[in-house]
Length: 492
Length: 64
Image (cartoon, rainbow over all chains, first blue to last red; front, side, top):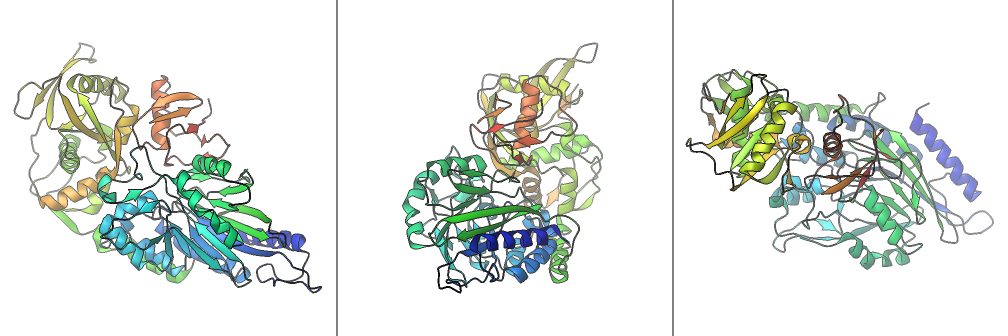
């Protein structure tokens, strides 16, 4: 017997025990045989942070089908970040549409707006909100007035057994007052404080049987929110953003909080039972999705189509010469991210380039993902020449005596007789010594930003854009890649 | 951004994910970076994926 079917039976049994009726747990009527009011229930399957995990959809589809046999009114919801994390989706000609089409096929009821929904760009996300057959929710955002985003603060679903279930959603805002996405993606949007915004919508509980929040705030923020809410206002918080795996029951201030990690490894099966006195009982179980099990053939066929979509194999640029070393490819990548990030300097660690050869001729999207397969993202710093020197000094030893590949500057390493780095000098691309007291904008990947230990005043700002995607966009614009044969930006 | 690992402060770039903070913690406190990352939990005992997104003042716990 499958784990989730066992769970379904367990939850049905629990509801029956509570309601002391013999009717099926999802189709109970409002009065029992003695004419007394009885409990009613609603069942929700919740996922979050799917991040374009297309390959798990055939399995999810099969699971949803079987659950709907038991719970015809099953509500299927996402707590946001449906997008970003799979080239088959992210590089699709209509960026992000594979996920939307799959969510439509499974008949999702609604989705929170996660920060990565904005990764499709302003026009792209606006387009997606119209292509989705489900509703996007976010109460604390105000789209630009000249746009037509189909996003609502809340929605109300009435189940066949007469329950009115209100869903309300909040999106996390970072220290800069915007969600964690590239700033260009949210131009013109206004974002309001989520914990203040919720106060405007607590009336929903008065007019409905159940109020469920589907948030993209992160688990700790959801706990903070639950602890500040008045009693008996919100019945359940379905969360996302922090990729938290909530296995054991988490109830804070009487409010159950769920989250199912990410990428469709898991889903939360939740049952809310409204008792005749209005009190709401909550039950949840974490189900495993991403394991062997039945899959739905029609959904598998659709996913197979996305995984072989031509965008992954199309030529994005032509290399005019062979690349035959990690250094040459590293310089190409740093030129790419420096151009895309519009900075003075770009840096890539030696380990950040995974292939040493790229043949003359067509360069494809998949080649870039082979060069840079880690999903690293760009991080922006403002560093003085002295801070840059300290970074290089630390990195040389940390990276096993391998130099950093730079763009925008060249470097001369001076080694001791024992091959340790004694000093380093920087030069502009014109060969002049770099002004060490000046501050430069420097782009690097998040690995370097997290492991290099050196004194620097600017803590850095993530740009929420993968280095590989930046390189792809750069090469598409470049069209012809010049020869890097003999290019030498590091002298030792 | 300020995050705590095993109740020790780690200052890191805004937008850092769980894996970034854990790596920075190892380096800052002169510990060897492990070949595979440990299970990371929050203050409530839940495990968190390494690509989980963080807020200022979040607290993470790893086996010491």
